[in-house]
Image 1: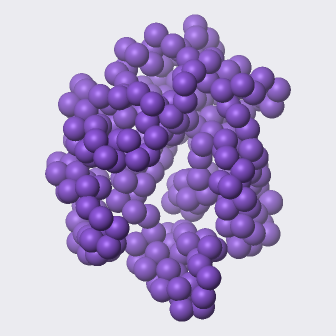
Image 2 (image 1 turned 135 degrees about the vertical axis):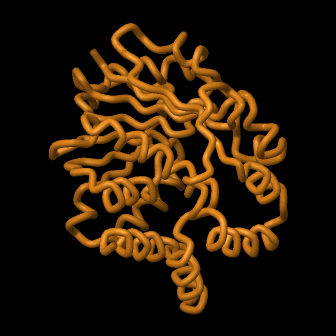
Length: 272
């Protein structure tokens, strides 16, 4: 219970980092404490982190060195507080300087004991050579669909892993555009329509062994679809009301059919 309250508190705190006035910071803090993540992130983070925790070997033990490519501070906080992952170093790589600056500001709001674990860097992951290696876990959460050379990114990620390390890949399926709408699909910068398990397996090098995979979605997909096709003002009303009433039960009604009839796919590999 304490860990979950801490998670809510720090998510709410970093939500204030770019707010210009005391009133705006206060409102952002209150709203984000009540509803710490917008629907898409809430559901995605929960499913990815729960899947990692399901295989205890992935997060068991201390001093985990983790690379989150294209990642976020919110996902770090989810792992750290909700799943009590023992992290010694957490690197977040972003392609844009502005994103790195925003991350640095947010990290600065955390206590020193947590702040010391996190580093944010600007890295062009499509061109960067794998010089920083020996990671225990690498996350490619909703990254492949944004890069031109997705094949090289998977290969280089495998090179960065230590032996027996884990690579978690989360991607949209080809149904994503239908569920969330073309406007959402284009607005978030997808350069391709989605993947199947077979698509990812074709790109994975031989040293990566597939441990598990899961197509996932929700019986409330219609609500996600409606939410992401509204204007910003209506979105804000929907997100806070629906998150309080609907999203806490998404885990109970989630759909985990092992086919591509769901909008998201997660694969967990181990380097052998």
